[in-house]
Length: 472
Ligand SMILES: Cc1cc2nc3c(=O)[nH]c(=O)nc-3n(C[C@H](O)[C@H](O)[C@H](O)COP(=O)(O)OP(=O)(O)OC[C@H]3O[C@@H](n4cnc5c(N)ncnc54)[C@H](O)[C@@H]3O)c2cc1C
Image 1 (cartoon, rainbow, N blue to C red):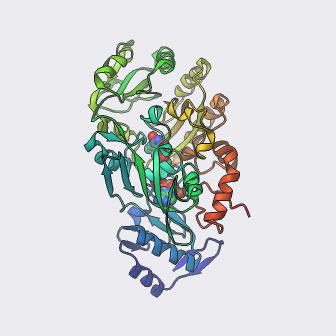
Image 2: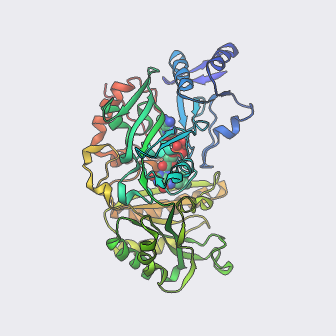
Image 3: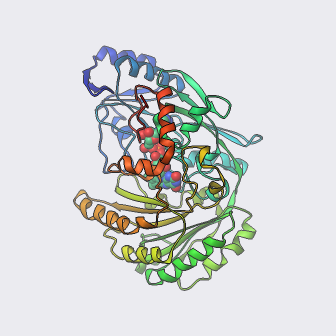
């Protein structure tokens, strides 16, 4: 079989060689046409269609080490799949060997030390499910099918970020298989440089097989959900968002969005497909207090739908899943914002009025809080001046509509990017975003990241990512 090497060549691997790999692996080794290959190579973003030559579905760190030995022996191009949710499709590469971590979804919660020991293939929902048994939660993202490892290596934010910072700020250690096929621990006490690099520098330094998350008391019930209004009320609703966000206690996280109304049962049928403005809220503290905190939202104007209620935290964590299904075509742009300016709201309203697809949106996530109180030197995720994330997620069904949808996202972004801090979320970068966007995201830490890369992966074996070139 033909397979690519990391130095840019194509080589042949014999059937015997693949059989030998199979003998080393407890999980599955798949080649095209074998059962499970298609499912494994498929990513969340339907725009990406790549065919690795071999897929190894690892079952533990020993499988990962065996793969690394094989990769080194044949100099193979490797890509790593966690939850497969990266918009740029970083998890799959044509002709590569893919390490698919999705069978490694074990979790052990230590409720006394408030730590979750997770395997690298966990999805957000896996971690929430186990930690909530103890009324604890890790700082994770908004859509439950996202992979924890990709999210964490790029930073990570969600409903709990205002209280405790980026996801990667709340990791106490990681287990990593290195480019020279050793397993090492990365933490404050061991391999501190590696630990620093992994918290924002992505999958550049090794293959993470496990992450330990600090946990916090949350739930099991919180106040959370969405209130929606007709888009004609957007000027007032976005002004409400702006004001509430300024005064919000850390337990309250607000998200504003504009989009065509999805066909959700909580929205009246006659609104489906019509433009709406909505506020998504989570009060993660005492629900009895939260009920009062969200009153100004529930009492505002003529709501067309309201599911902002007391509910299990795990339920809120999957509330946005249905609007982000696997396999649709997606193209996003994002910026970090220092504040919400009225002029930005005007632009959001104008661009939301021209959305060409029933699935696209413009979203403002509030993240201001704990992350701003940590020094820039803490870890390369940086962007300690971010108070909001602007995301323009384009989402549509058919390839014939690619051009008009991408054009809409790009025009809206061009018109709004002047409101940015200058930074953007590395995990929201699309395939066509280049080194300038990486520099904007990782800032002056790039030089130190290159030094860490040189130490841990001098041959740049881990290059199917937002790649940091070794400083040779
Ligand atoms: C619908 C949706 C909602 C999202 N919501 C949020 C959100 O609320 N908050 C947020 O912060 N982000 C969010 N994201 C962005 C998300 O953080 C990134 O897409 C992230 O890359 C997803 O991780 P994954 O493991 O699913 O990715 P994959 O596509 O599987 O992997 C992406 C890359 O991560 C690296 N990687 C993955 N696993 C490993 C490993 N074990 N070892 C080394 N490197 C590895 C590799 O470079 C890989 O190519 C969302 C994305 C989507 C699609």
